[in-house]
Length: 113
Length: 109
Image 1: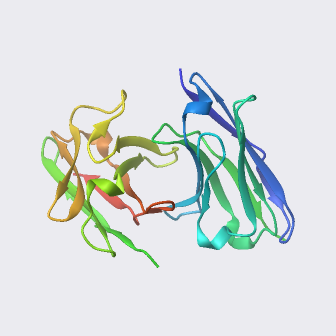
Image 2: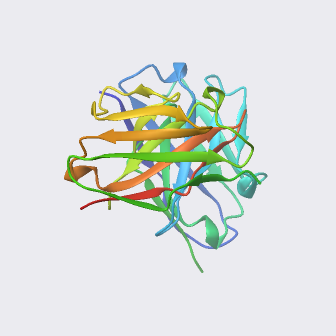
């Protein structure tokens, strides 16, 4: 069955970097657009980034432009989110989501000094 | 700054019908916004229910349906079950970026 498993979350200080991964299985990864979505504690969902099938087009929400980078390796069926210059407000659960679904279970990122 | 607006909360009786809506600050929501609806129960990961206005995933219960209603995207639950109590988010596509609504907390009482 379709499965998306995120990893790479953890506790990091402000200004540092983190790379999230999302391992996909059960479907032809290269045939789907992919997204990262996050949820701050007790808050709603926020779309973060989108990548086209072959990585040729990428979009970001304004608050992460210039700091985050989405990428994919279709040979490894893996989606990535490189997060640099992390801020406290980047804290939350990060979900990998196939367009239009399903979603992974998420990985927690905590930015704290 | 594009804003997507949903009802903050709704209450429905078991077995009843309820419609949640999703409006865009840019004007009427059309099929070109590819409206998605996502369900999230407390302590769980979100689950996609509806995409491209009205298309259902294989796991979406038949009682959920999506449509366009009066310039908004709409999610209708018919024959509501207690397990439908959850937060529901709509998601609209703006030609690159996607934007979530603030979510509707649905209470089944």
